[in-house]
Image 1: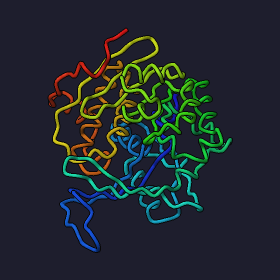
Image 2: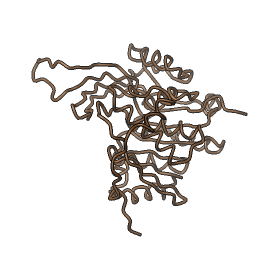
Image 3: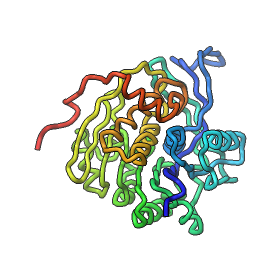
Image 4: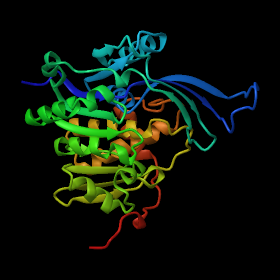
Length: 327
């Protein structure tokens, strides 16, 4: 039976208010005038699911929001993009996870974040069949999903997804070494682990990209894809298939959500049956387009535009030094 959904994205879904350019916070009660200010649904699960929906996938968001104005707006915006929200929970004891993002002129995006309903949502037993009626289950935001992670529920769901033949992808949120036990429990049930280079370094204490990948593969992941920012992406799987792809040359406006948009683009490639290199290229194009606008997914239009972006946008020079060529 064909699953109802192509892509189900569970985890960190946040309300963002973003402005740029911000070089400093005004002292005292001063005011800084900015050129742009916008709102966006973001987060490791939120940005990914919107990119997938923009690319034409049947997409579902699973997480939590509060009974507040931010939660109302998040639900409205997800629905506007055609994302199914029937498994989005209203968590009355929590506010909606929300951020203020102060984007720098170079695209860096220091943020102020209020933790919220991502910590409070929970998938009940009677919801599991519905949740797993999907081709791909993406879990985004390990480290912020306290009720799901601390109870072992995330691990149970990912294990059941694998048992049913659902493709599983996993991302984390700004990991620290303390998050490694949570991540380790999930890796044996993970087809594709997609952390940033910095997150993988924090989890492992290592620096070389091949060593980082092997550290995570040894703990059960089937494939590790490291996002490297301006240096592209590094892919390595348990079969020994490995490649590095350079990034696109773009004018960066805001990097908020780039890694999360990468995940939605990668899922798009999987659903369309592309080979690993093409899946990563779609992912990188999604991330790069995101960086050309303010607010997660702002630069992503649709699948055809993403393919045209790949054809028309030059690549940075290949950086061979990014991967050790030792034994």
